[in-house]
Amino acid sequence: MERRRLSDTRASETHKAVIHAEGKRVKFFFTIGFFDDGRPGEIFLHMDESGSTLDGFADCWAIAVSMLLQHGVTVEKLFEKFAFQDFEPRGFTDNPDIKVARSVVDYVIRYMVKI
Image (cartoon, rainbow, N blue to C red; front, side, top):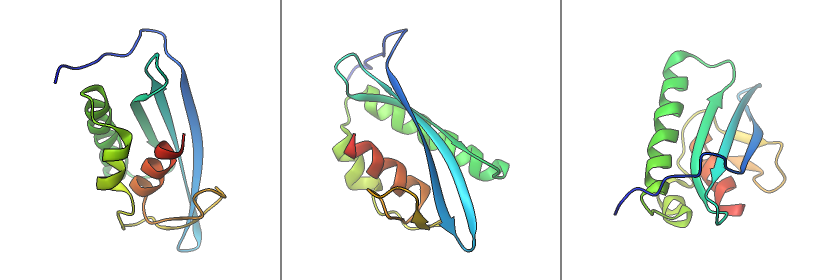
């Protein structure tokens, strides 16, 4: 399938999330850019106070998910693959809709399917 590009000016939503993991707070931010029809078309993920390895992984994962969205893969299909992936950091969150996150990937994809 051919890549569908987003408009030069697009609607977006930035969300701050916190996972309470092993006695510390892991804070991260992600921005979802939307196609003109309101469907997600890209994400940017920034880990706060993390090392270069986690930051690099988060950036690469967000780019890959963005490319999939732009090539027609639905958020629901991504949810099937990425929801409930279990790795650190994991724990309770401040979001009443996602009370427990099994990982940052789990949190982001479960958030995206709800919007």
